Image 1 (cartoon, one colour):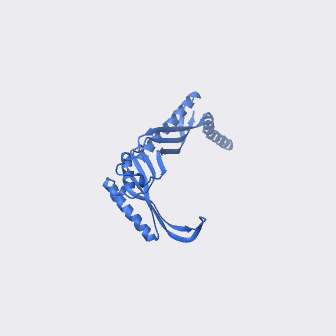
Image 2 (spheres, rainbow, N blue to C red; image 1 turned 90 degrees about the vertical axis):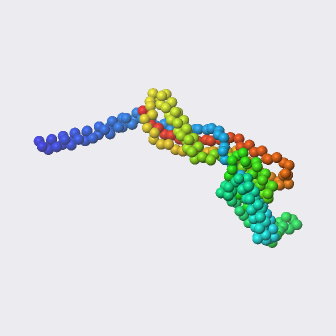
Image 3 (cartoon, rainbow, N blue to C red; image 1 turned 60 degrees about the vertical axis):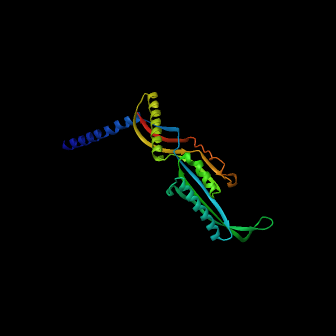
Length: 241
């Protein structure tokens, strides 16, 4: 008799243990998983500019080419600081020393060095409204190339985070709309993925300004920053019931 009672107790315990799993399976079968995308896009006014410019010098020896380049850059730094640009906002972006080879009458390169070329480019961080004045000053004081001008936001991280938050709100709005259409509601956010967040600025690039085209009578070069495009994309996975 005691054996029968023990067997009954074991069967009862197993049955009770299976009930929650059965209920969970039934609840899970009513759940719907939905993946939605969220996007935010806006145009904002830039408050910072990055100007990449520099000078190229050539000479028969490395030392001579370096000295010529250093003389130009020293003068350029001094003039930029006279405009109110602090030294920490003038940084070296690119510096190379390259041998220059002789060519034969057919234009083929010979294994004979005729001199050396030094390229020294700097990046200047400034306000957008000072961009034209800086370019003109640089070209008038030894710079012979302007490689790029890029505009952006000083608080770039904060701006991007705000855009991501808006993209998530957009995704959740879509998820709610889908839930209503299915006569369900969003009960859980299962995953959020950041696809991209970009601050796309108007950029003037690969532009070479000739020093000979400048004169004291020429007004400040007008540079219009326009607006920068801020975009954020996320993917959100939610569960509906």
